[in-house]
Length: 81
Image (tube, rainbow, N blue to C red):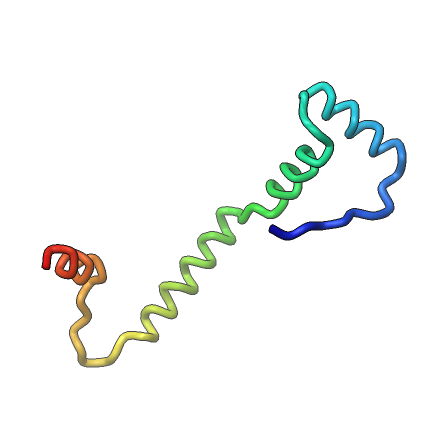
């Protein structure tokens, strides 16, 4: 896993984080990790944009004039052999 070093936090901020961590019976690092994880979550719109790009790529990958077999059918066929 990666690491991040956060510099230039003022002393008051660090003190508040320590108090909050003590109240929640956790560490300052755990609080920071959770805040960063939440900040990095994809929004619904970002997820939809990813799906749209995947669908567009899938359409471009199709070979014109060749019937396409749904992937689920191929997986079942392979599984049942």
